[in-house]
Structures are given as structure tokens and as C-alpha cells.
Image 1 (cartoon, helix red, strand yellow):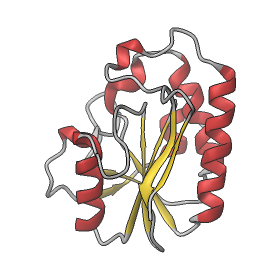
Image 2 (cartoon, rainbow, N blue to C red):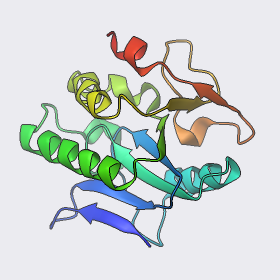
Image 3 (cartoon, rainbow, N blue to C red):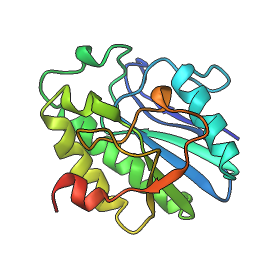
Image 4 (cartoon, rainbow, N blue to C red):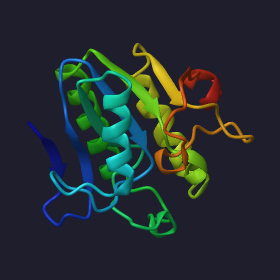
Length: 167
């Protein structure tokens, strides 16, 4: 069963996934073109890696819900309403699927806009009690790798979200 929550204009996506009882929740920066049964390259990797690591479901969430095939096209300033709605959808996902592991997977794209790390800080406060992982080690600059840039045989590494966001 799919979960999929875009806005009416399809310019925003809050959730996408095929949840099970034990989910890998991937946190990226922003959604692109993926839809149910029509995954983009990133979500094809997310689905595959979740299965390879023994999860029976996967869910894609994002630091910022604006759809942009190029992260350079993200809003220059954060839209507060979009951010607040994103936080509500993330809270609901965790209520519905509390047996989940959080996969930090935003790569260096988090540096594209100053507000993204602030958005992540708000999200991390919702997900604080869940285990966080990265796949493979973090980059030289400390960022978890984006799914498209991973070797598929990389192991899980514990990810210190509080240290990452500076708490």
C-alpha cells in the first residue's frame, strides 16, 4: 500500500513510500518527480537499499517539501507554511509507523539554502527518539551521503543527528 501526499498543484510532496511494520525512513532535502509506481533514480535506490538491509517498508520524507529537480531552484527564503505542514506530516508518519529507523541522506545539498539546516533541526526534534543511520561513512565535510552517490554494499553507520545539528 502506497502513502503519497502531494499538494493540489503537485509542486510540493510531503510523503511517499510503501510502509511496512519495520520501515527505513529516508530523509532527503527536497522531492523531485517520483510518484507511486513511478520512482525516480533516487527513490529506486532508496527502495532497493531498504530491502537489502532487511526492512519491509520504506518512506521518503524531506527536509523541505518543495519539488525541484534541481536543488538550486529551491525557494530563496523558507516558506513557513510549507515547513509547518511538512512537520505535521512527519509527526503523523511517526505516529503511524513508530517502528522505524531514520536514514540521513541529504548529502551536501543541505548547503544550498541557509534555512535547510534550521528545518532539519525542527525535524530532528520530532525524530529524536528513533535510531538514526547513514549508509557508509559521512563525507569529509560531515554530511551523510545522498543515495545516488553510495556504493550499494556500504554498511549502516550510526548517525549522531544531535552532534550534526550542533546540539
